[in-house]
View (cartoon, rainbow, N blue to C red):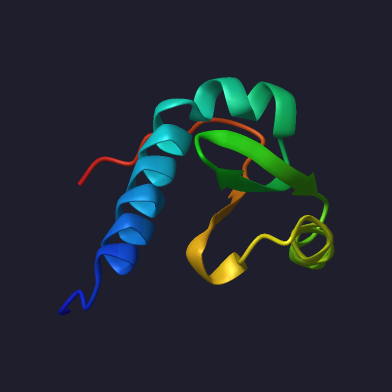
Length: 83
């Protein structure tokens, strides 16, 4: 994938940073958001809901672009998968 602009590179870096933050905080997030969807922006939970549609509505209200945001379902317990 070729990055065309500094703006695209910044979006990719933020997405990567938010993804890493979510993974490193997953155990804590399970306590607060188990069985919920969360939207992460700038290493913070910007929205949460029971369905992806809830996240879509909140993102629209908050003027957050879902195509460049981290949205994840938080399971009820932490599971480690070994390969």
